[in-house]
Length: 447
Image 1: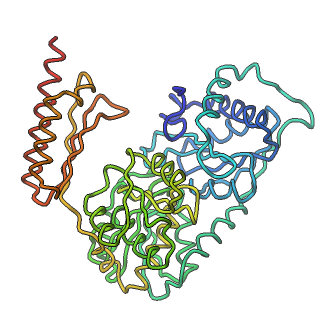
Image 2: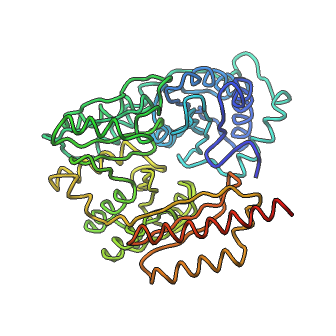
């Protein structure tokens, strides 16, 4: 595994780590590797609203054209739209320039394969190697230089996809928090086309404010807006709209677990839930597992991250999966998590049921406690004394809760998560395990 690509592409502070020079090199390397594997079609590029987006877009596209591959720029668009359009127009690959829910100063470059799925690790490894050697790659001249063309109209195909998956929303009022990001015009347009009355919130392309106290990363403004428009529901997107969270008529948050439960129930009712199985991560609430069990639906859990959810979906031949964060993947609709499609699905269900409030009751959320402990050595997670405390906590729950102690994959941190019916009980056990982990870490540092 190379050190350039993370789990979600190349990401970092724009113009610091992720410089125009690196974007240019990625464009050259990516186009060269794709062409070596037979790609002849244009490469499709989209971006979110970040101020650094045009800078990185120009650099990346110039790099692609410099090795002879054409580029189609679709402008400000959501990440799932890039995934869909890449497949729809049979592009050589797709590239999204976005840092999703990350802060304003960050940005990222994510490649999609021709099928709209994440580029294979082996190809990312090849690109990483060629980034270092990009100056030695071919430089065609004359008519062999790639063209850079604007193809904004292609986005209408994605709008048609979203509208086609929906149902009439006449009479429904929806507050849409676009997080000043990629969904700022697409989401309101889709919901209005379906007949909803849309109250737009933070639906402007403002790269200075993307994800700042708005959208799915901070639902407080959305809750206030829903309260100001009685009878409405709310949907909040993140910067690239690959995830969505909701607020019901009472201002209560509807997270990804509840969305998975309500969609699973509906798909199963229609006979459209393959193998009666849903995929979620180890962090999904116990309430989801119990609600699915009542529906006679199996829950397959994966490691944290939508990438792992997608891998399990494809490997198992399943349809529906996601995370608490609102990253919902419906492989019958798109090849990646899609916030706008999730909004269309949830609003349709709310229209049928009469309220999102009623849908929210599909599952009970169990109290969940998460404690993070910084450590000198993440191997402490496997210490026998820690495992003994975990076993003791599990036995105390008598099958009505969960204990998860794991090492972070990105930080020197051990995460302790507990769920159960009584919050004071699980908090006590979580703090007890955390104290043991901290003591062991201190011993390690002194040794």
